Image 1: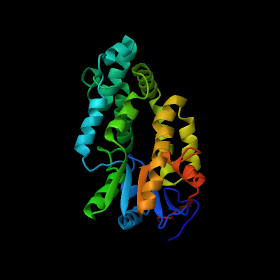
Image 2: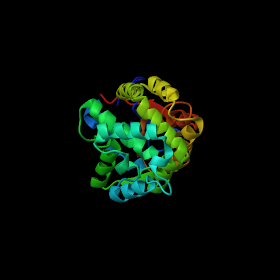
Image 3: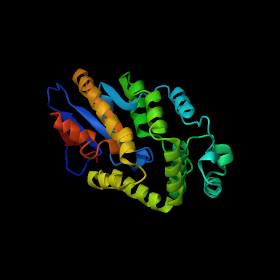
Image 4: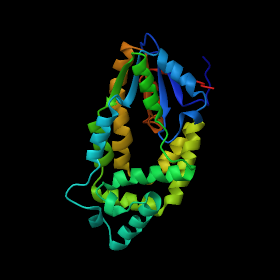
Length: 277
């Protein structure tokens, strides 16, 4: 197996008392597996591992999606109450243009959920595709199930739903959604650069884009990224001590001083980038 400093989507984890190495792979839900160079090699390494570890166990996705949907709904307040008439009309028009449905239909959802929908469908339109690519972490877990391997989720669907939809106030979510839609061209350009950084395994560019993302404040960054990384780092050593793990989590959870790569190194593990091509 070859290694190189520029192949940074996947890492071999060894040392610190591990009997056998484990692997860490960064995922991106808007990228199709066919775009990832050497993806089949990653799948073959996952197949050779004893267990696949993901952000969430995706075995029963229907139940997980139901919990996420329930958590995404507004309670005791409507979307119309969160905006001035002018801003509400602006958002309604933008959603109708993008999705063919306005806030009269979609306004039962929390602004953070609406934001997720808006970003996803804006991206699909920009790329000229009609549906979201299959998540690559789902592919790894699907292979694990077919081969009788263990699957571990680092978070429950309930926890993930709470983090996604309750980390900030409804008013703050409303503010972020309005900004996202008003500045859609800027965020579309940023998404394009992030996709490019991902496909190049370019940690430096990804970290810079993440740091410059003004759609999150410090507290939200702490809830959505840093605290989750720290929670995962409490679980990973025990899992890796018991078996060879193939760990697949969102790419941005790998980057920076608080990312998994840096923190695993600080904990005494050796991390080597794996060349997939």
